[in-house]
Length: 476
Length: 103
Image (cartoon, rainbow over all chains, first blue to last red; front, side, top):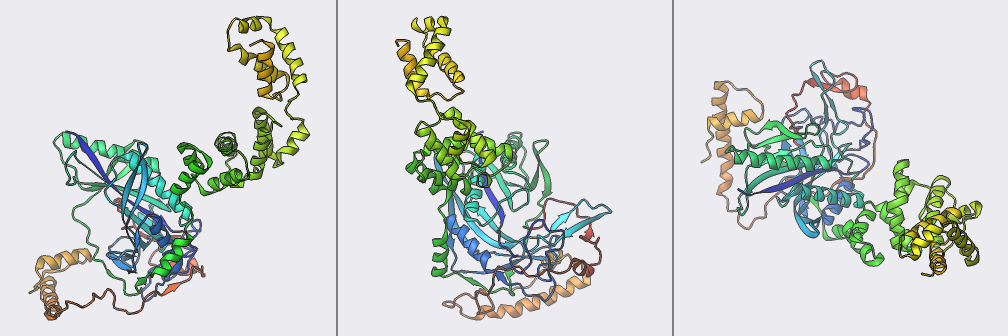
């Protein structure tokens, strides 16, 4: 039987406010355990949580970017359960009236667009972190994370493959980073993704039994876990078995998912309105204010870069991967340098230097003006593309402007026909065999001559001129 | 009529992690049933045309600005706990069942 996968994602992102969602404790991830705590986030009785306005602003921004409707009226609720990741035996979340409802995010699938429906995005407090490595039959609890502002973004079951899930996560992360609402750092847990996965015979519309895969440390891990899980479920069904509803973990070393918790009964969280927090009313003016502050989003920027600067779809994708990278490119392109060349250098030689030095483009010594000036030197024939590679490396190390480097090192391109003619004639005379071969019709030999001439001029010969002179001298 | 069954009481007790004796359960069946019957009187009212009330308070939009204020001194924060190691609150070892709480 042919099966198809049905996947929905739940993503928790920590919103990068300075203080926690309901109290003034710092959200600094690197603080020692239990130093960013106060009676409110420790869950002491009788305390009064107050919602952080910036959390609402950033959540509205995320909601709008995900094409959601922003609720005019929403509220916080208590979600009741027992677990040592919080002390008050409930988590403050949003249940039936979340802040953001009914949006979508567009991903690219096999070269075409596909919309993944966003069911909702709601605000909640993060829970404390449990530490299981202390020994002595004890677990530790660190409340620094408790009360960190979380936005939970839930999709419709619209995702059909591991690749689509990966594309969704990548696009979502990029949007949230462009909005500057979250660091989306999976290693630090500021972005956590869970996948609900089921399979069903192709052509049917009801859902199969789903499993939930959580606690995966990377997007590629999520992708692999989903791939594995789809195969496992299909195999189980084909062998006459049944998929059990359960939570499964991902063992990255062995490349398998494994049972973590079987769901004996559905959770009953007995949500009820949080009496300590008042309803949130976002009127049209508030929503409009946030909407006007939104930056250009990745998809729009990609499209504009392709259209305005003639970048290929792939190049536009790479160049807009981060806002800093895209801003850098745009500054270079607007300064009058050839955009296509700018993109090539950014993605090629400059990127290689940055990766080697473990630097981000905005932190390096090569500013947009450095790159732009260098591209102009290539364009006006002052230096060759080959020499430019050396200039780039020098700029990267010294921060000097390219003109100064060219001057100091005598790297000016030789565009003097007479001088080059002499060199060309000498090279031809020194290599009679190759000269004869070329005249006999072996075109490839031209490359050999160009190489020899470049060698003789330390790469400074103007390549176009060399070509012209060579062909003339060879009578081609 | 909203009488509550023994099964309902057991279920709620389970969620609250309470272990009840048979006598306690029987008493709660009665008491909770009475409470529910009392609340049930509200159903006699015609509420068609009445806006649902989502919250007990009329006030909306109380916020704090995003400013960091001093946290507790860690020793003071830990001192109120039955058990700690100077860094962490200590609890009986959690058998990690993948739940990781609710979040």
